[in-house]
Image 1 (cartoon, protein in one colour):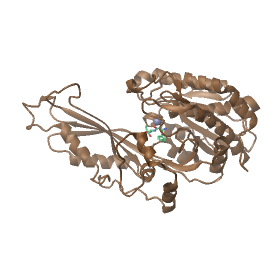
Image 2 (image 1 turned 120 degrees about the horizontal axis):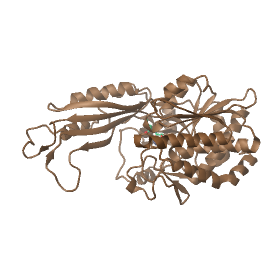
Image 3 (image 1 turned 180 degrees about the vertical axis):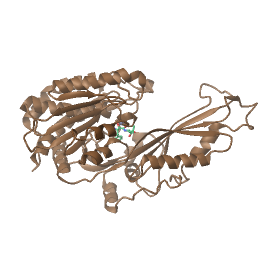
Image 4 (image 1 turned 180 degrees about the horizontal axis):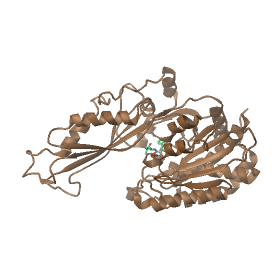
Length: 460
Ligand code: BES
Ligand code: ZN
């Protein structure tokens, strides 16, 4: 039998949607940009705002300091004996909003247009985190109780690599003991089509600096006799791939596991509209590693990308200059069983070997995260599937994701609990980009799905 969202929870959500949206708007107004120290007070304010809201709905809440941004830890432990404990994880920090001039409405002045709530952090991840808070509120307000024990853990450093969270989870492992971890920080496969994830890629992120002359030089007086660091960096970066698009760093693929043929054919069977995807990205054509479909490239294969490049004169008009320094931000998305440390070591060795004489190269570690593959199946996936079907009218499809959530592997390793990635974003949501949005409808349906999930979780 198909599950349903309980009628009284549904009615409570119906009656309160406007207030829930207004509250989310308040949360989104706080520019909790974790990467920028000038926003540290805002990031702390977002933690305090969330904690106050968790307290208000009846959770025992603490803001726990870490060496970086604080963790918000909220608990409710009044479920009947034998009921399971569920840990909800999300993040209240957001990516920088730049380039601000490309936003249609200001990034921290949330605006609804055409069923979409636009703001930095709307979908990644404040809206998706907040819908869990509201689902908990619905249960507590309507029934005065929850069918499961709940731990809500919200961090403020996800967008900068979650550097302190593995230690936090390790240090609080007893308190965080749970039967299942639920995360909404990803997207559905298509509008109306919910998804459960079975894979996330990991990340290794480096900053490469190439130094030539002690300072910028006149390109006429010195060019041709002094090695140009911008050209040196360009040559080095060009060696990262071969002409077919495969990564050419020796050893890079050694730890990569091929995916099982049945998983690959399931990925290929998903109704993926390649033309629509091309339209969404607005490029002339797609490209990548030969031998894999677009979804396989995104979910199952590693990458090596330049995220940013800086050197020389980039202002209006021409300036004849030989730059003294060039810099690139380089990151690799990783797949099982690659590790950030091993991949960083390989890139470092490769870039040093590729550097021409006359320049010095330094490589700085920025952040990393392990890839993750889950084991779909079992009672928790089934409960999540029933809840998603109750809210969306369709069972979820199993999908992967190309992005990273560094703590997922740590949860599985330290807490030994299955992780359910139940995202309510949508393709084209502009996460990390100008005009980020969350579908207003998904914000509400997500709430209903999560509210139903607690009931389903208790039923098994
Ligand atoms: N919400 C994303 C993770 C994600 C990205 C899920 C794409 C599904 C699709 C998360 O907030 C994020 O952006 N993570 C970073 C992690 C990094 C900073 C270590 C990422 O993937 O770049
Ligand atoms: Zn993000």
